[in-house]
Amino acid sequence: MSSFTFHFMAATFVSSIGMVLVLIVKSCLKKHLSAGGQYNLGFLYFALLAIPLIPRGFFSLFNSGSRVIRNAGNVPATSSPSSAELVAAYSNGWLQDFALAADSSAPGYIPLIAGGLWISGVIFSAGLALLCNRKLRLISESVKPIKDDELLSLFFRCKEETGVKRDVLTGTSVIVNTPMTMGFFKPVIILPATKMKPSDARYAILHELAHCKKRDIQVNGIMCLFQILFWFNPLVHIAFKRMRLDRELACDAFVLEMLPKEQRTDYGRALLNFVSKFSRSPALLFITRMGGSKPQIVSRVKHIASYVKETSLLRAKSICIFVLMGILVMCKIPVVSAFANTGDDIFIFRAENVTYSDLSDFFDGLEGSFVLYDLNEGAYTIHNRGMSVTRVSPNSTYKIFSALIAMETGILDSDNTGREWDGTLHPFESWNQNHNLASAMQSSVNWYFQDFDRQTGIEQLYSYLAQLSYGNRNLSGGVTDFWAESSLRISPVEQVRILRDLHQGNTIFEARHTDAIKDALQLAERDGVMLAGKTGTGIITGAVNGWFIGFVEADSNTFFFATYVQGDSDAGGSAASLITLDILEYKGIF
Image 1 (cartoon, rainbow, N blue to C red):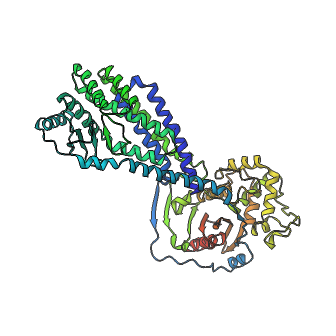
Image 2: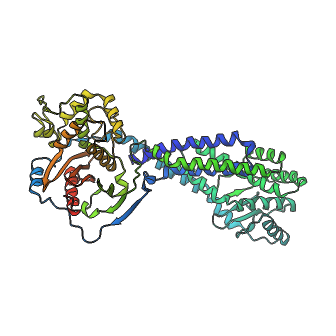
Image 3: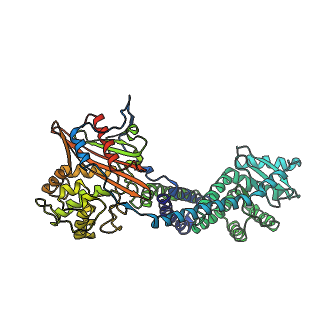
């Protein structure tokens, strides 16, 4: 709920900016747009309002050069590593979890309340819309076939004249006093049962057939749906109110284009004649009618009185403006969708050589992702495409970079990494003693690394993380806690890319500092192949998240990996490490 609410509200804000831009263009370029062009620009609202409904990371799924495979044959179940060195490392604490629970209950109420209010508003708005549309059933039941042969013949002539090919029915009703069209799937033009002048009847039928030709009933339904979903956004209601007026102006223009010049005044009088009989009623979802509100009628009468036949140049300019605005909106949708995630949630991942592989059998029911990078092949193997680019808290895996930055700034000497314990009691016994880099990394000692970050300061930390392109680089959670289920977030793919760059020397850090980190991360060696890694565990509001990142280094090749899992108490850094080891063994890497 928290993630969805933030994404939805942020995307709605950015979409609203786009809607304002469309409204400005419609106003400023009004003389260069036909009536139909003004109406058509309103369809861009639909694209903009679809942005908040686009799943987070949707556009990151389209990676060039990627392919998807599923493992063939039986995959072994998750088990403990067989290597004696790894068993010893695990029992000594290298792969155990050392994590303090983070309490998110206070900030969690805000998105929960906001989400609840939004859902309540949607339910209320939908109920109100259905309540207001009860009259549709009464109108539908009151419709009678047209018995007047002249009126029926007029209807078919008008249908042929407007070029409407679809199946459109017609009838009369004693409870309607202005022409209207209803029916989402099969439109029915309903005329008042009272006697009408033949000219008024013709104008009314032409106008309603124009609605059918443009499928305005379906469009009106979509507008009402968006108004229900975005009930809290006044801009949506304003934009669609204007779009409904543009729809009527476009239909008027469609009819006026067909009429001789001397009949246009009669068409306007017919509109006023129907309006004088029009009684206000609630807005109906799947219906259009010739009448409207007083401001609408005033605008329409002015438009009819001043109507000039639209030129080919005006139509061409309208098309060009619509196409340019459409391209602008469509090109910005992926960017806006990513912006709506504020850089916290989704990493836009593009790579040429990516294999998406189903490794779910290794995760034993846990939700998670595994990313592997083969240095020689320059190829990625990824399990769970969506989670691989989803940014989450790095937890203790960040300590790798805390130490690197401390060495780079001179706070930590790579040749003398010892630090004295200040006597403060901590929940883990292994934390209550002196530590050096290797032992602090092994037991994931918070105070050891937090002291480095305090001395470095937020500004320098941000500068280094920005140069590393480390996740969202959001340090607003505070200098000691931003990495522990707080503001800093990073995806599994990004973890692997940074590890690769560190190993290859493609970063801002000196080689002797990265070598010191490699030594501190070393877990085991077998037949000349070395495994290095760091776990991380986050416990927040009853949920557990686990990381295991690192690399396998041999003379001939190096593989970089990042495993992330989430779930109940069975998830965590230990679970992530065991899953990783099984996958590496299955692939013959370690």
